[in-house]
Length: 445
Ligand code: NDP
Image (tube, rainbow, N blue to C red; front, side, top):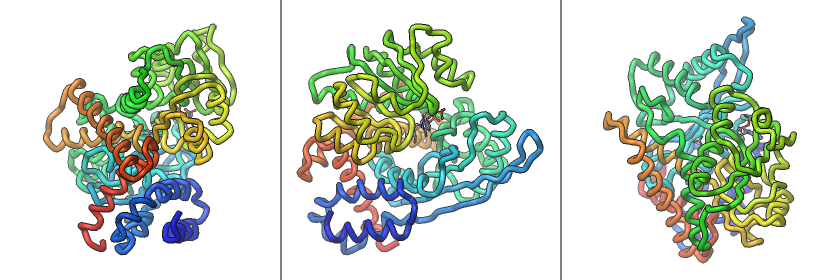
């Protein structure tokens, strides 16, 4: 990196001590934009990068609630409003015990560039809590969500900041949060996305991240003169993104053979029975090992990380950050993987990305490949503003068009800046340029 970018990075590490995921996310972007700054010294002069790495606002708050035993519990809530240069802050709410400020900041930072790529007018933000919905009763989840929103509501709004789902935040949690927002603000607005279809949600939003990922990887396959038909696919996770990536990939002829959760993974060489997984995960909230109870030919393996030892042509990490390290990437390559598309946020470590790229594996980075979810959230916002609801086919067609536009932006930006075929650089550069130009236009704010 240039001396200037090195100095920005040093400052980020010093100012945000201990937030290693945030450092990782910033470093990847700074490494990509070096050729852009060479062409645009005005971005250095106006300290665009120095400003970009500092959130516009970060909110941390206490979330007290009462559990089913009558005990008071205290969690910590976060909302990082990172950048509003191109629209209201937009990004999900993660509920997971691993959540701390560094996770929310890495996600919020990534969201700035991802949202810029979607072609829709949304800024970057992210929120969450170290609350774990797993094993909690519906009443406990409701008590937490209501308490969380009782603080958050004053900081958000349909033209200010529009949160959505993420790990641990699905339709149930969005419902409880929306209900509390509506009660406190006495307004019925599109303040959250991922809403139920009866009360302002958009068709296709549930499927959007997984479908969008498959649309993006389809373009990668087409550039290699091939398609999904007959390809062996390994997908990590068995949540929202994993389930709908599986559904779309299967509909295009792929053989999805493995899925996981944080306890372990299942391999079903005859092809994952998605209806069974959906019943297990979406209805019963069970564990992936239970899949084998009804599918005796499938095998369960304890521990989720070894899923990358399963030989496949296409790998779609759809669980969490840093779930593929350099060694695991090397095993995937040795076993013949040719395409990797990131459904989760930052699932590959920098070493893993380098291993894939040096081995000639086509690599689709998260901020481009999984942008279909937030893009469809932006379509939900449009429908809410118009008080209209589009059909599934209409939203799906728009999503498909957006994923194609994202892919084109990535390939074109990479080529323009001398990194042909590097989709990581292309995504970072295209996203950065849009935000940087907008920040320049707004003056020093
Ligand atoms: P869900 O909560 O629906 O599912 C998450 C899945 O990943 C579960 O199977 C979960 O297993 C597994 N998982 C979570 N944490 C870990 C961990 N530390 N180690 C191993 N497995 C883990 O979340 P989503 O599907 O919505 O999100 C998955 C990823 O996709 C995240 O990185 C998210 O940020 C990203 N993403 C999601 C979008 C969306 O629209 N939902 C949009 C863009 C990105 P278990 O049940 O055992 O915890």
